[in-house]
Image (cartoon, rainbow, N blue to C red; front, side, top):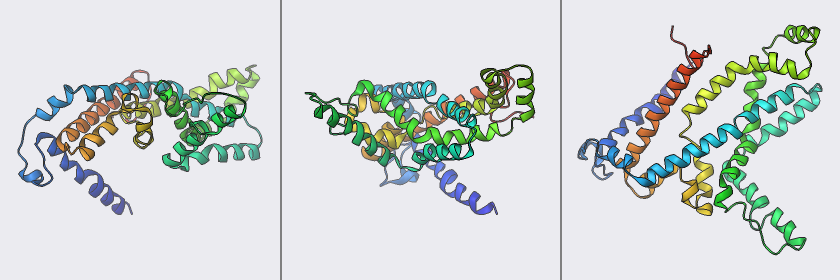
Length: 288
């Protein structure tokens, strides 16, 4: 039963990896990778000496670190909050509301934010109605772009992320809570000494995966808003590779940049997993 899924994965994921050979070529789609001349490591030298690429790396890491601090804990908080709701009907209603934005496309999400925070959006219309002489450019202000995209990510995906943490909470034995109540633990101490330790393996696992995905931030989300705020704050590795390869036709340079990103991401996963073992957690895998 798994053969069709494996076949799809091989054809559409692993076979295309052979195309990475163009990172060592002066590739031209007219000559093909069989006839394009090899240039050794020249494309990788261009990657590491290109100021625009290094700036895209800087933006990528800035966005990742900011969202790691202000976005990653949100699903945990929501899961704890929902877990404390006693009424099943209320819990179900809240879950449905917070899950729903996950199924919206980024085009729709950005459009909704534009209708609310844009120059002619709801907030500016309200300010104009009450006598304000100028509008507030939430969607085009480079200084607040980091907060904007993080807010969009929280609104869209935080609700979906709590599913994993709610599933982890169902594995906590009720006897632990009962024993803590008998020992005099209040709600906060039960959360600190029972609930959070139960979530720690899942938190560590997701944190490792997040670190491995550190160089991949929302491509579609950022490219939709790139022209509005400028490439100085919105250019990340994925958008840079897209423009260099697809738009400008520098396929070999884009392939080299993509390979550098993949190798660094792999190193981050392995390093974070090793660190998890040091702290006694299983991580993504544990060597037998």
